[in-house]
Amino acid sequence: MKYEHLLMSVDGPITTITLNRPEKRNALAMAVMLELTQALQAVAKSEARGVILAANGPVFSAGHNFGDMARATLEQARELFAVCTVMMDAIQAMPQVVIARVHALATAAGCQLVASCDLAVAADSAGFAIPGGKGGLFCHTPLVALARNLGRKRALEMAFTGDAIDATTAVQWGLINRAVPADQLEVATLDLITRATRGSALSKALGKQGFYRQIDLPQDAAYRYAVELMATAAMTPDAQEGIRAFLEKRHAQYTQGPEEAI
Image (cartoon, rainbow, N blue to C red; front, side, top):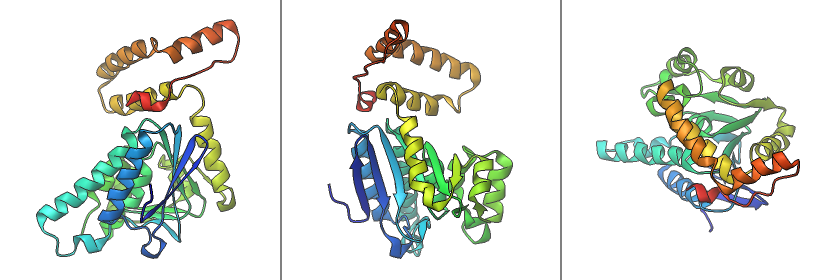
């Protein structure tokens, strides 16, 4: 499928989706969000094992397109942010591991996009901000994702001040997994997504779904959910193959794809 605002490439088990509106700083205009959601949902049903979310141009993503909000009605504003939420949720709903490859500044909903990915690697020259605190529209929706990556105090510092943090700080605060020199970004991202997708694809997909389902539950409810999920997962052919391979001291041969978790 061809896209107007995205590039998509497949390299074996890894699919790369690239925001490709550099002249617009990869702003998440309505058309871009709808297209990205469509792309994510299509990959979710494929045999891909991992997804790299990248961008072209001097900015990873500048967030929402203010042109969509200028003179918008309340209903239009609700629709805009609802579409954005569906897009962010699509990342965590898909069975594949999704990693953000951040080469430059990610702000507002662009920062939210990074926070919504399962993993993230950034160039050490990249930056992250939710700048609404400096202006007239607080970054309410980006803060949902940021608060689930950072502690309260750090998330609120970013939200209230609107100041950017560098990639090193983003690692320390838990927004991204690691920061690397810009010329090592592609290699480091591929290394992490390759290691994160090895083993049974179905097992990984169930693990991702289980994580997002239990992470905000009280501990007792989280354990009830995880016990049932793990017991059920232990019955799958891939789980049984992994157990037999371990006992027989051989390499496992997994056959179930991530799309089977949908």
